[in-house]
View 1: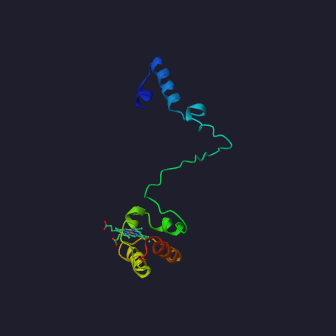
View 2: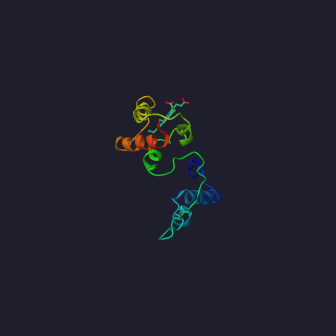
View 3: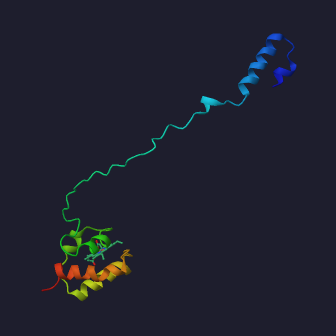
Length: 123
Ligand code: HEC
């Protein structure tokens, strides 16, 4: 503050003191306290029924295939294929895993193949 060192006039000294006060660290309200957070906060879980359409597999044993096979395409895309033998469905599931890198839980493969054979199998 060159103004403070060179000034010999009373008024300027007063201005110098004000400038010093303004430069002091500010405490209290000016620092801002975080907004008060309620002690407990209840999350709400609204239950919404979305139309299924052909997006998901339905019926008995559909959990495994719903959990593993809907990341990239709908159920309709799978079910619109021609009926296949159980061995062909098994190969199809492994093709998804090997060729398209489908993240399928290995434990779920038998249930997926069983569902496909039961619902889209060759008679
Ligand atoms: C990582 C993404 C991904 C996942 C997960 C996935 N698929 Fe696919 N699937 C594909 C792609 C890509 C195609 C080819 C789409 C195309 O040709 O238009 C496909 C095609 C298919 C087809 C049509 C026939 C064919 O071979 O192209 C069937 C049936 C099928 N998938 C079944 C499944 C089943 C059953 C699962 C669960 C085990 C599954 N998919 C999981 C990516 C995936």
